[in-house]
Length: 212
Length: 183
Image (tube, rainbow over all chains, first blue to last red; front, side, top):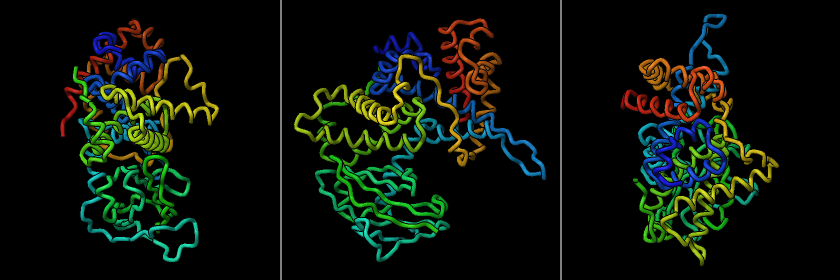
């Protein structure tokens, strides 16, 4: 799709409204992958949708004097907040990602936990248990070939759902032990794994730890 | 038009793992792919998985002997890699009807994100801003995104056609952007 066509047809609004055919949808996505102006239109339109939904978050008086939120609106507003978090207003997401990447190498004040280099599914001799009430710093080595950099790191829960990340680590950063900050109260008590993978399908054995 | 100038030099730095270039790549495409995948109705965890897998495949292609032929179309290439991954997932889940020729609807609210109900200050700002929109614009936005009326119903109620519906949304967004409290 040409830029002028996208402007003339208000493609960004059509995209958010679900008012494009599959072919138009694909053509417009291909266009805004490179076009800053059209992507800004899409992001702002998404933010408006999110804000409209967030505005419907209205507490109602429940029995016993406690406030609760209407579930449907709660879900809608949850999506809105998720959108505002994920998409952000005025480039929030970019700033957040830069922050996420920066924490990999920044000095930390939380309790540091060293994750063993290779567990390979066998018995864990020194089980790592972190305290959820305090900020924790996970320290680990990336022993993959530098040629498979950049590496991505993420923390997943016992069901395999990502909870922190994915975050990128360059080959230079992986020369030294990599640290990943887990802010206090980010993870509920349970079992988690740190997954580190590189390009070409290579990955480290999962590094498991517990949160209490 | 403001196009990001992807070129052979950018791809070379990316392939070699240059830190700032990798950071730019991750930030640039995470933001775009997040919106693209949210529009498809994927959950947050599936969005994260899809983005990670897309990045892995893009880097594998960058390092392959053939490399990437058209650096200037790098954005479209990354999106096509993501699409291929989605097709594979849909095939696996036998859910190909999500990719038919019908229009894509906005994703339904996801119950799994209720724990993210917070940041009421932003919601309050949005509410205040919505009040400043023209009454008809606010009503149409609410009808579409809160009451989830079909677009045909909205058009019939306000006596407008589908093209004009986009224009209304365009104006509402522009006004909302202008009025939303900064900072």
